[in-house]
Image (tube, one colour):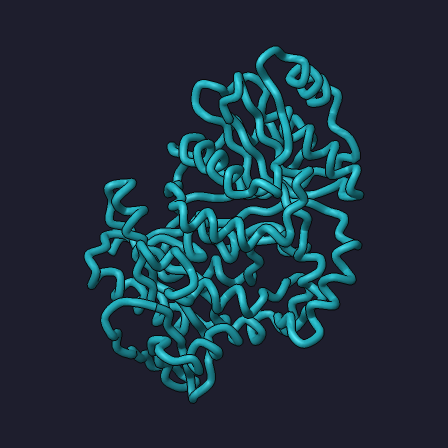
Length: 389
């Protein structure tokens, strides 16, 4: 975690003063990570993160996000007990790409207490303001490229666990954020699809695509992963360029992500579309490993968690489609429908006949319509907030 040495801040409260101080030591980092187990102890739908994944994300020497970002995490304490946490982030690559001065906050967790939330948010805002930021936006965990969890806080859909790499937050976060002057920036939608086979319309489009001259669809080749990453990076940085929140991947970031996802990728669920040998579209779906992580209550793989993971992975029966993009100039040709159909077909063969498409920007009407035509329906909604500094 980088940046000038921040100072602690305090606020008075009936139950004692709230102190917010920076995370500067390994012990602080451990308390920062442990905080979630306090917040979600009684929430049956929470899926514990892998502690090693959180440590990796926060480690500047291990995670490439820190090569172009400043990150400072803070703990809120009352009478010596941790009652909240937050990270403040300046993503220089994002600001350069969008020509803006936006800072973000993320990994936000707090007890249901307005004072704790206020001091955490004020501390993050002050840290960002000191670095010349004009807007604070979040939660981002920590960016749209380097997600531990999806952006935003849950505002609809609390009655089921999140799928892999999606967030789950308490109901009261919306109240605390809005009560502290943050306003909606965007809503993100999760769609549920329960389809043992593609709807007839999608099946026809898939069949038509596979018969078109010069067009072919294939799955990712894990034996040539470095080359495949190069193709995916071409598509991603072109297909998503105009999307809100988009930041081009660096090569280091996408290779780090590929390394992280390699153990859980099912290549059958990752179609690539080529037109005259040019890569033009890509989709990525993952088996829902949250169904396994839900059983690792302490978030530790060692000494015995790895055996639980290996044993229970065979029981995974759902999938999350987390990325689908098409280069400009090749849209409105049915490639999106064909890739969704491909994933439904292959997921069915793997015994995963249901799942989620997420996250989708609320104003991405084209994508939302396509998912709804495939039989998907909105079942969770997340909200990203912002505040002028």
